[in-house]
Image (cartoon, rainbow, N blue to C red; front, side):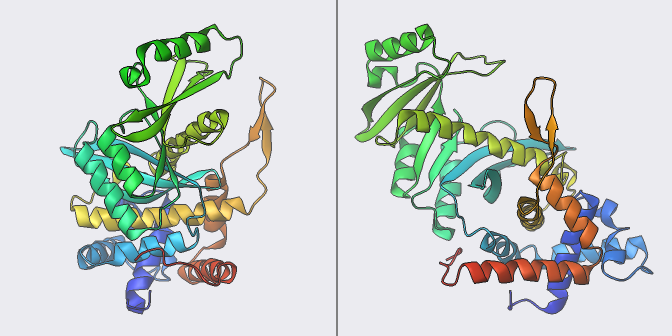
Length: 361
């Protein structure tokens, strides 16, 4: 980020470090932490608060948010087969927030790479999600990746946009959707055979055409303990991959729900963001994503202890994210240490990718 002055980067990384330590984006709550982390213990909290608010006022309309996101994604290089699309919403006073979010699944963790605040509750429109994908496809190299999404994100126009963007898809359908295009009898036969099968993971599929595009219907028995629908129906443009692999891939979509949980109550508390200006919130969100990437990468480098449960199952005692954020907070107790930490991560990424493609174009 050579185009930005040292003081800008200092404030950027100082606020990011305060977010990691405070596990909140509430600037008012962070006012007591940022001074000590910047080496200015004598500053009054009110002075620190003004410093942070001035930072967002000065850079909200600049390209700093994109530079921050680019710096974070440079650590990932988008090395993943899958994308996930979903939205999360909340309300602060009279202000409604609906973050339509596109994530990349990186080593089993969903990382937001593009988002849009729809400023409403409810589902997104076709136009809104098309704009998000066009923007992401223009800025990022997404060709060859596969989008995983739930039942909200369907429709021939949507599927065609993904195809023209070079993005494959595996998307859940409502029961009965496209039954006529498949053939009513074929659809009913597949469904009944799934229900009659004694195999818990029974999968069936067939290929059909939707407005000239060859697609595939995949049905799989829902083995969830509290499953409301006994059969999960999926649509995909992949007509070659084994049907069981298609069915298994869809469940990776759940990782974006985990990401939302970490971004909200269990990690950074983005619901507490008091920035009403969309441009300021966009910059703050980019900083949160950057902090999230740092925590995930650090956590992936550690051996996490496991825990035995009464069911006999064995899982990690806590997440990679939690392991990473705890280690960063323990080792980066001031801005100088944090800068060194970030610098070493970027240096290591550059060593591993000697000739990387530009992430943003």
